Each structure stands twice: as structure tokens, then as C-alpha cells.
Image (tube, rainbow, N blue to C red):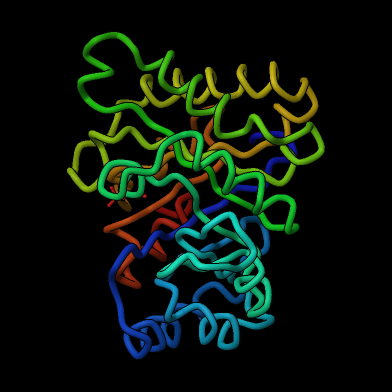
Length: 255
Ligand code: PGA
């Protein structure tokens, strides 16, 4: 479908699951993805689960991803985790700028831009989340908001660094609400994102970069979303917590 862009189906487990609940999930889930080769499957559990997940999933087709990190290597930053610490346990993927980080914990585009650049300079693969609130959409500001989030979030990267980045478009009003954006709203936003990437890094990178959709993705709507021209994957919250529902999303083309 999308040229050479291999789809990514990513789970954002947020603040759910203890280590033993994660182990239980993987014991059922890993056998179900053992023969999948044409897409990447990513799970982002909480920090406590990361090391164990890396070791359980070694050689098993699953990418372990962090949900956040700070941009400094080390220092007096109580409560934070650094890229160096993640790399040391074998974690190279990280979600940055998730709407809950922005809206509950007050992260702004500037801080998120520093994190994205730090991740890339440590050889990591950030998933940069962007998305408008309902008020911004109703005021007709969706395009303006997405452009600003992209521009500031990616401003410290050169074209080379952009190659490591995945974008997740997640309209804030669709996250955890059961309200998915319509297919035309999704395609419109994704094509705008790709245009902006083209301006920032050129045509070649814009063709290669993956843009995921997130916001109430479920087994019964994932197929239509994945068929859209500029959608290269999904970032899934609630529906990724159960094996039955997440495997249906991973195997979206078999539904
Ligand atoms: P949701 O969450 O699928 O529960 O809407 C998506 C996300 O927050 O990444």
C-alpha cells in the first residue's frame, strides 16, 4: 500500500499493568505475533516493566518502547529517566509529547523539541505525538496547531535526524473518549503532516517517515483507518490492554 513504509502498530499502556500483569499479557501475546514479518509491533509499558519486557521479548518480533524521558543524560532531575538509562537496558524507542504529558504535566513544544533531539542524538527512535484540542478544531486552528507542534518539536533536527522520527497524530478530543476522528479528518491531518515534513526535510524523507493515527482505535475501526493513504500505523491506548483486542488491531487486515 504505502510504498516502502512498513506499518507500525504501537500500544501505549499508559499507567496500567504491573510487571506480573505485563508478563501474563506477553505469555499469551508473543506466540500470536511470532510469524508476523510485514509490520512492526511496539508496546510502551511503564518504566518499571521496561527491562523485563526487553528480556522476555528478545528475538520475538516485539519492540519495547518507553512512554517518556528527560532530555539530559544525568543530573539533579528528581523523578526523571534519561536516554542513557533507557539505552543501557536496551530500549531505543520512546513516545514523546503525548497529549497527557502536554495537558496533565504541562510539557510544551519547546521541552518536547529538546527531548526529540536528545533521543535522536542518542540513536533512539522517538514517536512524536501531536494533535489539536476540540476548541482548537472548532476555531478552525487544527492546521496551525499541528504545524507549530511539528516545527518546534522537530526544530533541532537536521534531515538526517528526521529519518529516525515517527509522528503520531492524535486529536486530543479522540483520546480515550471512544470518539474517533472521521476518515476524512484523519487523512486531511496526515497529508498536512507529510507536507510539513517535506518542507522541513525534503521529499525523500517525507515519503519515508511514518505517520501513525491515535485516538480510540479499536478492532472494528482500525482497518478503514489503516487503508488511508497517509496512515502508516496506529498508536493504541485502551484497546491495547487486552490480548484479544490488541491482536485484532495488529492483524488489522485479517478482520
Ligand atoms: P486511546 O489512547 O486509544 O485509549 O484513545 C490513545 C493514546 O493515548 O495514545
